[in-house]
Image (cartoon, rainbow over all chains, first blue to last red; front, top):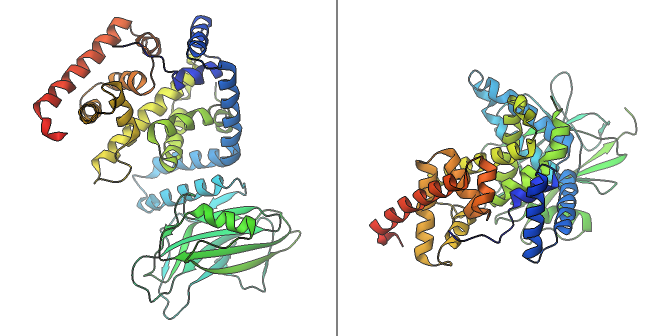
Length: 255
Length: 169
């Protein structure tokens, strides 16, 4: 077996965490130097990566998700309907990737609700969840910080084949939140056969004043979710070939 | 030491995520496995008292990532099935040849199917991460000769399999 000159990322991480013995740390630094690298620069790079990841995946949010996952596993054997939760979990991750940190609450952890609707156009439906039944909001309604907002979509199309969609929102401070898909990679393949589809997560409105503009971008061809974010932030066109519908929610200043 | 999960994640989360990314080459999977790592840690927080929590977390991340890769490989072929980890193992041998690629596939299958968890951890640390035998030995608390022996046996078995069925390449 030939001797490796590569720098192990595991050892570099442990060096950064101060877990290597003096001898091993010295040996690793020498190996890095011998390979033409700069150990200190590598450690700085790791710290920068740390900051970036913590911004993308905030500790408060990840902690909530891990706790949720622990609870889910404890009850998996007895509560079958919790099988819907992976959707919720990944949705939370997607929202985190967009570096916005409103708190998200899992509503009743049920499978996406399906309500048969005929003859409707593709659109968004926004609910405010409270103590009782969720209340469907109109464009005349206002919501307050702390309100739980549930998003649903309806896709109506005569075009054959799959439809792909992204739901995101942007507030007056240009903070973008991704609601669908679960992760900010590719647009979600939409459920087009069962009328109104509620997303498995509700989210809590933050205190940012003004309005929250929800957009639902749909296309017959796959596209990148981040393209929607970029379009919202830069007021640029949405992905080619896509269609867009939106819902503007006015927010009250105080609850 | 019962670290609140937020503190645990704040300190070690990025490290764990980088590890998962490195092995899985898929952001969604990496984030998902990272969560599993912290769930595992929370369930056995006493194990973080060993004075080297980063090492434990990295090992857990490695093992859970390998488990994820294994489960992925059981599914029908997907574009991500041809993982880079296989390719990196392949590069350990003859640079990028179809033969080494076949060997790599065999090796990874072998690692996943029959070998001890410590053996597959050693294989990843050595073949994928580029650790020397001495470095691997330090990580898994075995002697260098012990690591060498295990990896040699692993490779011999895999090479034996490879020569039995050249058609795979």
